[in-house]
Length: 522
Image (tube, helix red, strand yellow):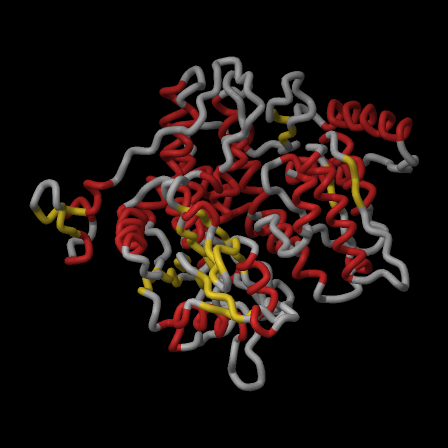
């Protein structure tokens, strides 16, 4: 079994059908692309990497044990650092549960979540049965998935009140509703609820109530090995490229692209030059960055890119995902040297000058079919952007912009981020450097409306939530594309960041809409 790399007792399980002890690898299902593009690339849908699950021996093992525990109503807890796939594995498990028997609820905790807030969120998913008895509707079982279990604030006495509430429910199947005015109705007995949880051991409180932990079967989620990462990303890229002409040549490059990206991540993560510090606290490179690179690659459409252009697309995505985060020129130069070395190592057959030539920009607003294609020259880009700018100024308040080279680079970068699924941009620069103006132009190019809050002296959290409701009605109910632009000066209360974080991470802000408002939406 040398080819597997590992041969310990944990690599085997007892298979009831075969009546034999076999390796976990035998349970892995081959990855099949969830959506086949037609050869013309007619579908507008883009593959969303965050919804894809490529099975490895580690994920199969974890899912097997979670399923066994769940069948008997026992809770499971995944512990691991950022980017190890805790949430992805548990969400894929929740999707696999039969809809007729199970209801699911995903709840993200943060440092401002208290017991009252958590109880209100959890209570949304249960209905009254009789007297004090409550439970999920339709006689189903409800699975609560609590993400970031250890995030709540630790008070003076070492207690995390949401965790105390979860423990009380697990121990006694009840909680007390402080919103009820009638003392006889305060106690609510909650039936048919199970728990799954995930937490990052490098963030939040580093200890969790032992009496709660005693209920959970705890599993460690380790960072995927290099072989597993290659399997995951190679499978996704091969599935995407299977519709391209000249597929054989591109599939050979898929192997090189996957290896080059993982080599780049390892170099960035290990190099002392790119380590986080007090001024560069965002220099944190994880497997999520690899996912972002591949998200850009699967945005491409068949028959729109040559062989060289596809490798240039990879070079561009690495520059955007890793390079745009760097804060000074020395770091940018060091990164470019690292990336060029990877090109020479993995793409030695190509002309290196053509591969890395400027302008290195890709956009989906130049091609007639909105395909993600390279920008041929700055002159062509300037013509296209000037046309968009003139169109914008005819329909909106005038943007007095001069589109020099750096401004054009920024517009294309912003448009790339906000047009990609789950794309959010954090723009940093001195006042007057054009962050808002360029965002307005990029939003116009993508066909989005710009939404901003108007902060006054009396503007409060309630007003912010009302504005977010308006935003949700536009984007969620009417289906309009909206860019929500928020500046640092508009954040008057730090607590608002909790709502923004919920909006970015899951889109679900607890208790945003009342029950009567939900009825009118659905």
